[in-house]
Length: 136
Ligand SMILES: [Zn+2]
Image (cartoon, rainbow, N blue to C red; front, top):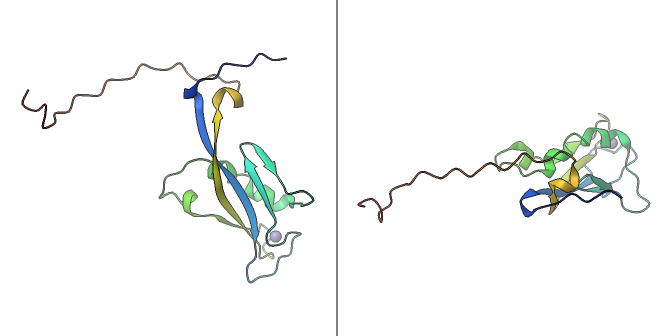
C-alpha cells in the first residue's frame, strides 16, 4: 500500500462540479439523445444516471471545454457566461447546457504526484500612509 502523502490546508483548491444537460431547440435531434439527458462531472469523474447513455461524438466535442468550465473564471470571461454548446452533428438541433452546480475542494497532494514548489517567504507590503499615520 502506498504511503499517503502529507496534505496541508494550503494545498487546497476548488473546482466547480458540472452538469451537462441536453436541451431541445426548434430543430429536430438526429443523434441518440433526448432533452433532459445529462451527465455530471466532479473533479475528474464523469457519471451518468443509471441506464442512460451519452453519445461519444458530442462527448468528444464537450470534453475540451469541461476543465475550463470547472475552474473559477473572470466574470467578464466568455467562459463564465457561455453555457450552451451545439451538437457537433450539423443536422442535429440539440444543445448541451453546461451548469456549474456546486464547488468541490480538492487537495493538490491527492490529485498529483508532482510536488508544489517550496513556499516563498511573503513579501512585506510597503507602508501606506493613512490619516492616522501620515503625520508621524
Ligand atoms: Zn446531436
